[in-house]
Each structure stands twice: as C-alpha cells, then as structure tokens.
Length: 118
Image (cartoon, rainbow, N blue to C red; front, side):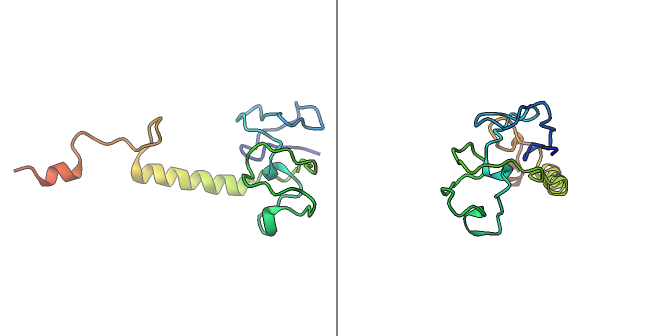
C-alpha cells in the first residue's frame, strides 16, 4: 500500500507502520492520525465517518484519539489539490499576496485617499 499525506501528497514510505498517533508528514508537518487520512472518512455521510462506533470528531484535519483510525491510500486527491492551488493562485492574482498576519498589504495611497485629493 502506497500512503501519501492527506494534505500535501508527500510519500509516507519512510514512516513505520502502523502510524503513531503523533506522526507528522515529512513534507508539510501536518499530523497524520486525522480523520482526513482515515479509510473510514467520507464527507458525504453523517459525521463524515463510515464507522458507526467511532466518537464524533469535530475537526477532521486535527490530531485525534480515534481507535478506529485506519490510514487510507486514497486520502490525497491530486485533482482536488490542483484545483485548490489554482483557486489560491487566482485569489492572489486578484487581491495580491497576504503578509504574515494574513492581511492583504495596503498601499500608502489607497483608492479612497485618491478620491479626496484636490
């Protein structure tokens, strides 16, 4: 079975199976013991999980204690990742790149300031 990180698609071949609860992706450092990486994860069903006995986990991409966790070889979808990257690129092209605080940089001369100049 060829495992890839659910978030970035990095190969997890260097990790020892079974995955530990606090194992992280060597590429993006996201935790791997998360619902999004599980074979039972399915956003189309109630609670996004096919395992009826599993406890409800609110944050599907956060580390959890689920005893039913089983890593999925299909957790990473390159088509969805490409579409997400294309959307991000389109937003950056439209609004500019965000700084470290997550806010879009504002020029010293904004369009509103230009309206009030005489």
